[in-house]
Image (cartoon, rainbow, N blue to C red; front, side):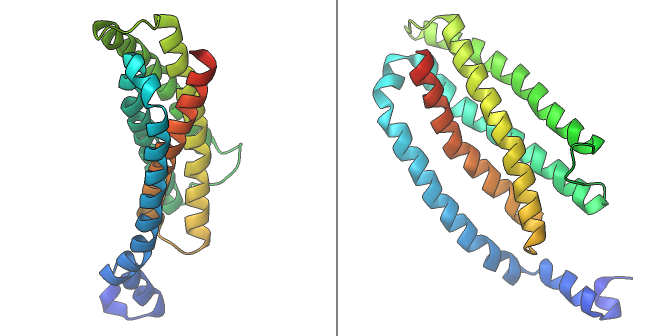
Length: 197
C-alpha cells in the first residue's frame, strides 16, 4: 500500500520527509554554513601559495588529495546510511559490517594515496620540481591516511547525529562530510608539508 492510500500519521510523516519544502528548509541553512566553511579552506590555501608554486608536485597533490578524501567520504556515508535503513547499522566495534567499511576505507586510502603520490611526483618533475619521490610519497600517504581517519569518524558522526535529531541522513551526511574533508584536507596536507618538506 502506498503512503497516500492509508492516510495514517506515519504515512504523512513519510510524505513530508520527501517533500520539496522540507528538503529545502533543511538544506539551505546547511549549504550556507558549508559555503562559509569553504571560504576558510580557500583562505588557508592562499597562505601556502608560495610553497605550492615552488613545488609543483604539491600543487598537483592538493586537488587530488581533497577530491579523493571527498569521494571516500561519499562512499562511506552512502554505505552507512544504507545499513541504517536496512537495520544492520550498529555503532559498535563488534559490528562486522562497520568494521568492513572502516577496513575498506583504509585499504582504498593506502592504495589510492600511494598511487597519487607517485603520479604527483612524476608530474612535478616534468614541471621542473625538485622534490624527491620519497618526500612526495610520504606527504601523500601520511596526509591521506590522516584524512581516512577523519572520513571514518566524520561519516559515523554525521549518520548518528542526523538520525538522532530527526534529519534524513541522505540529505545531510554527504554534504557535511565532503565539505569537512575539503577544509580539513587543506589543513592536514599543509601540516604534513610543513614537517616533511
